[in-house]
Image (cartoon, rainbow, N blue to C red; front, side, top):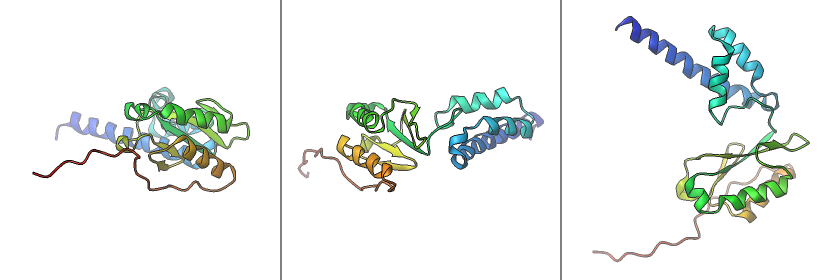
Length: 171
């Protein structure tokens, strides 16, 4: 193998480790953000902190500012928008008393929208922490938030769409 290919592979391995470390750090220290992690990681990998911060700030799942104990995320992909994800976001804002990319005064909840959660067939969807909630209605989202506010882990319901596809006749 050519030396330039080996060097590029090693750079890629460090980049992937960089992403993994950045992703794991905030999960352990949710409110702290990743500022310290960026500095420590840059020193360990002998990189400029700006390079690590570029990686961290490019991806939505990495946080460069403090966030709440719980993350409430609403999908804003085309499929979810078509299924009125805006109504889900509105309920979240009303129940939590905050806007998008804000955290409640008690530090418990942060509200965000994410581009795609990979569950277009069950739109609209939301994430509460790491639990995916499918076919979410405004009423269901309200219940998820109220359960969490009362100290309960919101139940993930296995639901199906209210839409029914026309039956096709056999050949």
